[in-house]
Image (tube, rainbow, N blue to C red; front, top):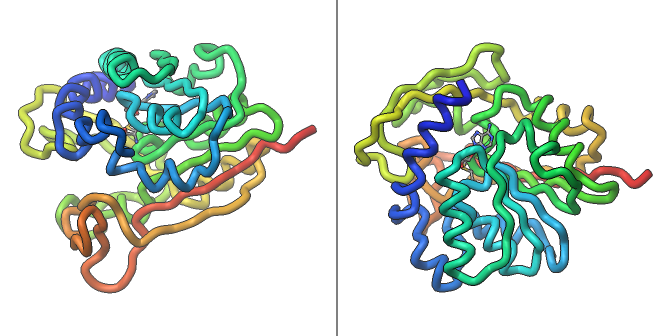
Length: 263
Ligand SMILES: C[S@@+](CC[C@H](N)C(=O)[O-])C[C@H]1O[C@@H](n2cnc3c(N)ncnc32)[C@H](O)[C@@H]1O
């Protein structure tokens, strides 16, 4: 299952590097990535902190955090993603470490702990168990350090593509959801060969409970009714890059901070 997902991601790296969605040109010119500018702001002052970005893709969010003063390490299981991240860091002259590893092996692959674990925006859905993931996060944090997680809201992942019809489970299931779709969210029309993925739902309560059971203290949890792109296929663009449900409010993103207690 991991191999299927890795092949999907490996093939998408060059497509994403060339996509308007990721807009690498603007990033090179000094801007934050369009999908994550709000998280880089919300995570707060990271000056001088030792930060690891789990499932870092080709490193744009990681490098944005380095621009704000963090000492950054990114981890991803896709070799082309890690290579692209290293190239991008060198091109823009930012010091960063990128490690190729499955997130479940992060503690062994990184071999040390951090002040901040940063992750999300399309990360958890690739993992079978938030309980297992929360254990990894806790093992990577120093006492007093925190996890910052920003994710697509599980409510938004319930719907069939382009339809206001519930098609997928809200809670974590033992069996994965299997998809077989060409293209990518960043370029729906792209021609691709590796199209099968296995993915999992994780309810908001499951995520929070897993973190608490792993020993972290939840400091805040925010839900948002705006998203940076048309994730469901029926959102409406209210202003450039700000999408919401057509009628009323539905939760589309959430973010949280959870800290490892001292002592
Ligand atoms: C949507 S990206 C999230 C990063 C960031 N939000 C972005 O869009 O640039 C998801 C990343 O998770 C990685 N990934 C998926 N499953 C993984 C696993 N088991 N271990 C490590 N990385 C994984 C993929 O290679 C991909 O780069």
